[in-house]
Length: 620
Image (cartoon, rainbow, N blue to C red; front, side, top):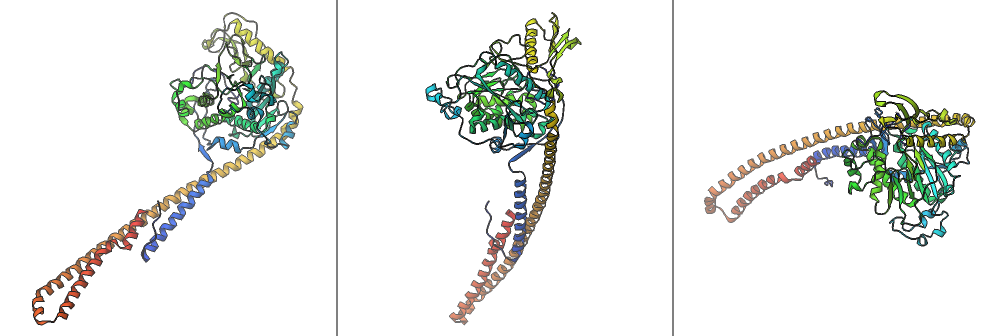
C-alpha cells in the first residue's frame, strides 16, 4: 500500500509472522519527629505533583524495531530506533482536541500556509443528520432517512485517500488523481462527485493546489521523513477528517465515502453496491490474502484487541473501504484506540510488523459487526481493486493496486534469472519525479516462459493487465502539468517552515530532557526522603523501647517498695490495733493506697500518649 512507508525496499508476499493521617499527640520530643515527617511528606507531595504535571496527557514508549515488512509483506528492512515515541493517553480525546487545517485546491500552496484556518464548525452533514439509524445500524427505508433533505444522491461516491506528502507518495498521488479525472469522463463517472486527500504532515506540500487537501496534524511529525512506522499517523489523520466532516457538511461530496491509497490506478467507475440511504445495503471492503487474524502468530494480538471470537475479525484493512460517513464515525475511534494500544505493546508490534495497522482496523470493524454490516470481497468478485501483476483480469473492479512491482525474468529469479523488464514504484522516491512525472516504460511483448517475483509464472492475462494499468498511468501522466515553476517559488518558503518546525522540535526535545532530569532528581529526592523517614521510624522505635524498658524497671522498684511497706504494715498491724486509735488505722491505709496507685500509674505508661505517638510515627 502506498501509505505504508516513505521509502519502500521491495515486496514479498507472505503471511504475517503473523490512609488517613493520625492527629498529632505527642510531647516536645515527639514534635521534632513529627516536623521531620511533615517535611518528608511535603517533599514527596511536591515531587509527585511536579512529575505528574510534566508527564500529563501522554505516555512514552520506546525501544528498537525488528526486521519488518509493509502492509503488503514487503521485503524485510532492518533498522533500530532508540527514540521514544509520544502517544496520546486517550487518542480519541486527543484527536478531538486537535484543530486540523483544511486547504482547498483553489488556493496556491504558499498562500495556503499563510492563510491556514481551523476547519469551521457547523451542523452535522445531512448524511448524519438524516440518518437516525446510523448509530444502531438498523435498516430503514429512504423515506425514514429523509433522502429528500440530503444534498447527495444515494449512488454518489466521495473518494478520499491519505498521504504523508513525501516525494514517494506524491509521485503516486499525482498519477492516481490523473487517472481519477480520466475515469470521471467515462459513463458512470458522474457518480464520483469528489476527491479529497488527507495529508498527515507537519508542513504543507506542493500538491495543495492540485487536489483538495485536508491538512491533518500528525501524531508523529518525525514521519515527515523516515521514521520507524510512518503508518502510525494514518488512523489519527482519518479520525481528524471524520470529526471535521461531522461538523462541516461542505467537506462531504457524496453519500458513500470511499477510502483509497496513493498507489491506486482508476480504470473504471465503481460498481456501487446500492443506495447509501437504504440501510439494508452493506458497505464494501477488500479481503487481503496475507491478513489472517486466526493465524497462530496473529491470534494472541487479536485477542488483546477484540474480546469476541477471533473468527469474527475480517481479513481486510482501512483501504479500499466503502462506507457511509456515520459508519466511518462509528468505527474510526476504535480503529485509533486499537492502533494506539498496538503501538504501546512490543509483542504485538513484533508479531504483526508492518501490517499491524490493518489488523487494528479489522479489530475495530469486528467490534461493530452487528451495527456496521460489511461485504468482504476478493477477486474475481471484487468491485474495488485487483493487484497486478498477480491478478489476471480487472473483472468487476474499478482500480488496480500496484503494491508489487512488475518484474519480468528469463528463468527463475531465485535461481539468478535475468531481469528483462522492471516497473517498480520504489524506484520513484525523489522530488524530481513529483515535479515532472516521467512516462513509464512499457513492458516488451509477452513471451512464454517469463517469470515474476517469487518465481511466479507470468501468463498472457497477467501481462495484459499490467499493460492496461501502465497505459492508463501514462495517459494520466500526459495530463499532469510541470510543477517546476511552482516548486521554485514554494521550496524556499517551505524550507523556512521546516527550519521553524525543526527548531520547535529541538526545543520540545530539550524540554523532554529537562522533564526526564527532573524526574530523576525527584526519584533521588524521594529515595532520600524515604531513607530519612526510615531513620526517623527507627529512632522512634528505639526511643519507645527505651522508655518502655525504663518504665518497666521503675514500676518493678515501686511495686517492690509498696509490697515491703504493705508487708510491714500487715506485720505490725495487730500491735497498732491495740495501741493506736482509729485515726492511725486510716492513715496507714491511705499510705498503702497511695503506693498502690503509683504502681498502677507507672504500669499505664505503656499506653501513654508518648508511646502512642511513637507507634504512629513508626506506622507512617
